[in-house]
Length: 529
Image (cartoon, rainbow, N blue to C red; front, side):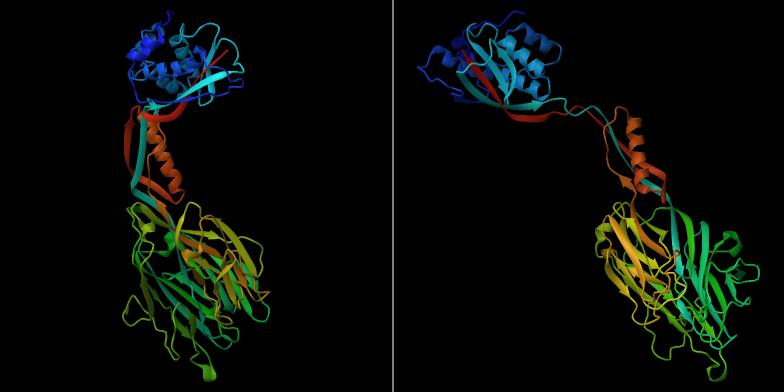
């Protein structure tokens, strides 16, 4: 292609100053000598190419690049355009541009080259010699078309279905005294949900193996433990006195669970000495709920004590009763409780609190209760680990299951969070402060001081987590549908197995090519002989 011929003096006289900074220095001069015309070539090249715009260049190759849209900013100086090509990774175009523009400008017996941030983009006439003259120019500019065209999407669930599990512990409590005497426990549980998909009753009893024991839910017998038609106890210990532990998966429709009050009834027999429940008894209900869910703050809970009736003989004909619940009971307290008929007169514990870190409850979070088993061999200590990297835990409970118990401690990551206040004062569950749970892996250990008092694998961890119901804008995709599909998949991944999105509100934005800045970049013109 035809080169662009001019005299350097004439070009400098007519050039438009664009504000580039030219730094002059004599570099790589190994044999300093009297300055010659060659010594000024690097300066002339740097000045010329930093002031001549590509729109002014009467050069066929430059015009071709402008015509096909490769060059879009006609105000760029030649150096700025070469640096823009280089920044975009098109070093070959930068070299060709400089080669065409400088064709005929430098005597054939003189070598020269151009470097961008030290990277050679054009070397002309021989390898760099021992005597080099260098002039530098700092340039910067706008890099166009760096953001790809396409679509981004975000989505949030406006209606969801969540699978969640509630646990209703059977308190560690009892009272019947003397052989053959009975203990009657009535526990009322209030359900504010329907859609129960599975249910399980677990009991841990210290007393007698009498076939006359009875376990009921809503006046329907549960075949569990030592009843005549039952399979027997899952765990049993006959040393000294009898203890049994069993669990039963229930046929949900058979037990007439209803929103509101539901009754659990237990009739137990004494083998001599008091009869009572050990830690681990509970009713577990897993259910599906649909709608919009916002975690409550403040939290208000009322815990009713169970109705306990106890038989004895002789001086203990009205055998004393006892219960371990989250409350202080004054001496001589009579535990009366019939909340469906007499809420005001029934014994209960009520408390409320406000979640201080309200940022956890920001818009777009769903609260879900999840229950997992502890795993490990039967021993006086059992521990398991859970990963809470992607979960915001707002409260948790360790439901302890034992055949026999003395003193229990609970630790999170080797830090004790609960110790029994006295011998045999082991509750059915321990509240775990969410502040003790760290993001990432958490190891929770249940330890019994009695070496032959095994903590069972049926112990549970229950935790309430906040699940995000929305995801923000993601990657850029060539089609709108691909962006929507990506947003839905990302939301599905965040919701996990416990939550299903039933209705979605999805937003899509179309992206056009957006310019960005590049630089500052140093261009060197080097001349040598």
